[in-house]
Length: 312
Image (cartoon, rainbow, N blue to C red):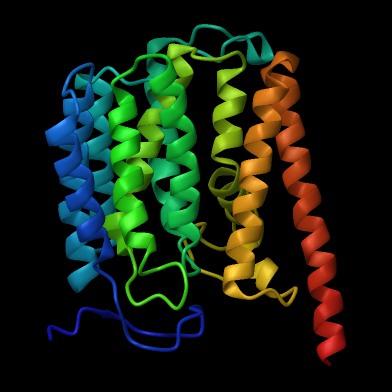
């Protein structure tokens, strides 16, 4: 009725006007579950405060469009709350490159980059029906299990988001009739970023930094790759294009659901791999993850080019 619809264009895969306020429902399920079943202690209350702030800017952007500067300012505010009041920050590299403790100013800078980077990474991978939701589901189930097994109340946060995403995926996975929009992707990315940092800092498992990168394998490495190529081409890293890994998979002839299932299986396989090889240490695992991602990209680019030639 209010024309709050996502319009098709050359960059998007849908071909019909589609509602984009799915994030409103995700937020509603997520926040109410935590208020009913969760424990607002150990910094969870500050994480919720950041989510509420992001909810309003995401909702406004889904309705009337907001400038990139305003969105960044609000992300900076939400990140500041969890960093400065909630004491969420990366304190060291746990021996990677011989670095253990970070000076506090570098700690805050790195934490800010990580939270804002991961928050926006989930916004950037939201390009196919069910893709962002599936990766969020896999990520939160995995991190939530680790927290639950170690008695952390952050497990409530992870599983509450899983519930919100599952309800949303019912209407988004195939022939989507609604999108999560910026509201859903910003809140989900922010929650995941904070939980990933807490996962690393609590040292719940060996090689926690590498395992967290493995859990976030698709969004982190794909965003880094896309930004790198945009920058060397002299373009803004935030300029939209069709160079994401899911676009490359579509060029191989896979359907949208085929691409989503492929990436989901890849992410699950990587998680199983890094957890089982945690004894190798952070540096070896991180280098292995980067190499594996690059190999996967090269393979699907070759297959994609062959498929296009066959079509010609």
